[in-house]
Length: 468
Image 1 (tube, rainbow, N blue to C red):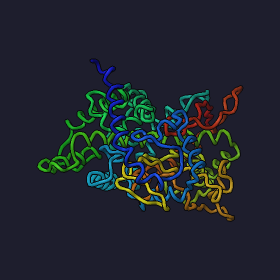
Image 2 (image 1 turned 90 degrees about the vertical axis):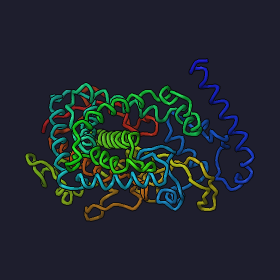
Image 3 (image 1 turned 60 degrees about the horizontal axis):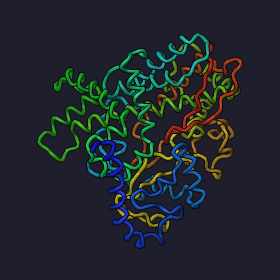
C-alpha cells in the first residue's frame, strides 16, 4: 500500500482512537470549559475554522464567546502555564528545560552580537542604504515593494545568524525567500493543523515532508548554508555569529545526551529566527509604505520632521528617534493598525489551568487574540482607523499606551523586539528621507488587508517611489 493510501487511513485510525480516549474525559471538564462551538475530541474546533481568513474567524468566535482581552492577557503574561506546540527550536518549542536553554542562549548570543547596540545599528544602516538603492533603480516606475523589503530584512537576519549578506539577485537567496513564503502558507493549512492536533501522525515516515514540502525544502537549503559555514568555523576564535556560538555549545555538550544543543536544533533555531525576522519586519514595512500612500498628509508631516531633525544628506541613526516624536508615533500606529499577527503564536497548556473561572484542560491549543488589545475600543480613540495621534499627547510628545502589545508580553514576548524596532525606524526613515510614495497614475487606491494563513498583510499593491 502506497503512502498516499496510508495517510487517510492513519488519520482515520488516530482520530477514532482519540475519540474513544477523550469522550469519557469530556464530562469532567465540559461544564466549566469556556463557551463556544462544540469541539471534537482530537480535532477540537478545527472544522469551525475558516482557513482563508483565520484572524477574522477567531475574532468572530471571541465575540460569540464573550471572551475579552483580559483573559487573553492572563495567558500572555504568564499567569497560565502554557507553551507552544511540541517541537524543537526557540519560538515554537514546548515550554520546558530545552526551551529555557534555547531561549537563554538566543537572547544572550544576540545581545553579545550587538542586539540593541551601535555595532548592529551599522549593519542595519548599511542594509537600509542598499534597500534605498534598489528602490532608486525602479526610476519612479510602478513596482511592488514587498520583494525588496523581504530581501533587506532577511539580510539583517542572515548577518546575525550566519555572518553573511546576499546580493538581491543571488539565485540561492531568491530561492530561500520563495520557500520561506511558501512555508508560511503551509503553516496554516488544514492538514498542518491536523498534524498539530494529532502529533502521532508525524511518526509516519515521510508524512511531514509530503504535507509540508516547502518547509522541508527550506530546511534543506538552510542545511547547505550551515554546512558551508561549519567549514569556515574556527573554535579558537570568538564567534562571528549565532551559528558559531551554537557550534561552540554543541562541542561543550557532546557528553550530555540531555542537552538541546544538537544538529536538529541548530537548523530549527536558525530557521525560526530567519523566517520570523524576515516576515514580521518586511510585512510591517509594507503596511507602512501602503499607509503613507493612502495618507499623503501623514507622509508629508513625517518627511518634514525628517528634514528638520536629520536633513536629506545625513543617514538616520537611532539617536535621532528621541527627537522625532511624530515619526515614532507613525511607526507605532503602523504596527497597531497593521496588526500583522493577530493570533500570536499558537500555545498549548502543559497542565489543567483555571483562568477567570474557566477550566482549560491540559493539551488544549490556545490562540491569544492580540487584536482584542490593539483594537480595544476602550483604549484607542479610533481603533479601526489609521490615527498616529494615538501615540501623541496634547503637547505632541510620544506616549505608548499599555495596550500596545504587537510583540506580545511575558516569557513568550518576541526575543527579536529590539532588532525589529531598530529595523523599522531606520528602514522607514531612510525610505521617507529619500523618496515620496504615491499611487501609480491611473490605478485605483489600494485596498487594505489580505490574509495569508495567520499573517495579515496588505493586499498586493504597486507604488511609485519618486526621489525627493
